[in-house]
Length: 141
Image (cartoon, rainbow, N blue to C red):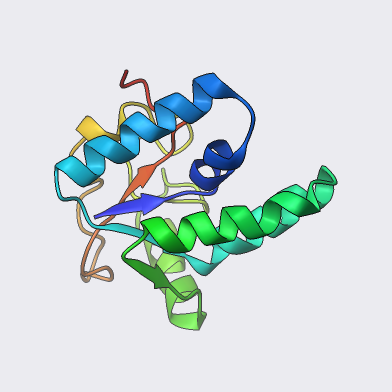
C-alpha cells in the first residue's frame, strides 16, 4: 500500500516537466508492481490550501480529478485517525507529528524501494502500514 501525497497530483498537473516525468515514472512503477494506491482527505485539503495560497484556483479541479482517478481508496481523517497518530507519536518519541509511515520522516528518500515503515506501535495501534509516494523526495530514476 502506498500513500499518494499532495505533491503527486500537483506535479502531474503542473508545468515542471522534470517533476512531472519523475512522478509519472513512479506511478508507472507502482501500477506495474500492482501496488495499492491510497490517499486521505488531508491531501485534498492541502491541494486546496496550496493552490489558493499561490492563486492557482484553476488547477484545483484538475488536481482533484487526477487524484480521484489514480487512487484505489481515500481514507477519512477522523478522531480515530488522530488518536492513532497520537499513540504512535507518544509510543515512539523519534516520530514527528507528521508521521507518514516511512523510516526517515522528513527526508523520505527512495520511497518505492523501501520496506513498509516502522516497527508496530505499542499495543498494535495500526493494523496496516503505508509508504508515501512523494515524488519530490524519491530518488528513484
